[in-house]
Image (cartoon, rainbow, N blue to C red; front, side):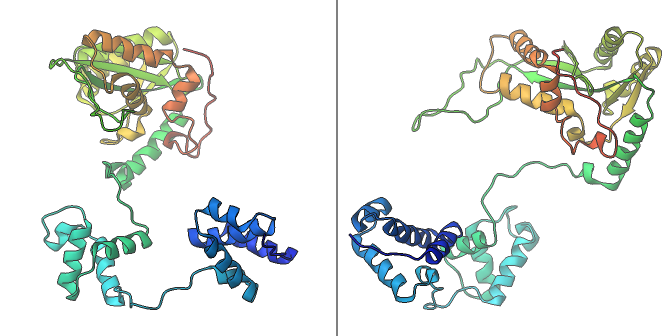
Length: 361
């Protein structure tokens, strides 16, 4: 049994280093000293940390020689000089700030091998794969999957349009129902997404080889989460006009404002004329900004839950499951999944947020 007999101040310094250990080695060494001081044997500590007893004794000797916790941290190695001179580091940074095709490479994304080739071309010396990877990690780069981004919602024109929409919505008369409207298509051929499967076995989704599609129109009330959903065979003006009639039927004589995009079925002369006759105010969202419409989030959620990784017997079965899932959500669940409860939702920025309803609708 080895007793370290740490003073209270020494133990506090070691505990502080344990919380802020720069790496696993420093953490293990500091933990070993604290455990020995608590009365555990060197053999038990060695087994716990999967090291030899000699290593634990060596850490004890290093610490007791100075009584300084920093003695347990490895010093920066000063043997072989680093590959990354200021010039080579600037070459790497400059490369990462542009796409590879800007340098006349036949690629759109940087890879380790392409970066090695570029650094050798610019500096005359070629680093190893691990040297490039370590430097990329040090610069906080990781290998990740890219996603599509539409820049239009960040344009000055779209921002001005959003500001005007907020003013128009704020000026609506009291008691006016405010709805978002959108439509989507579901296909019998199933979209694929990640899921649990046995390791070593290929994850398969049985399909019939047949395909069909159905258009789903939907609205959501931003105050109550109430939804109106209807399935149609096509995305055309006549089908959208069915939605307008269902809205008027569902809201009676109440004033209604409908926020929607500029799809051709919405902007058709007959559609706008019918909306005017039904006393439904159409408020147009900026073009090519689907993320501004909360219905888009509901569509994605329903497709992930209902459509992904499964082919139904018919498009009618899939349509029923799709609509049933969305209609089964409570009002609170619907506005939450649609993003309407977010403090950053664009429509409520600078304005009073409408009260939310928890009742099912």
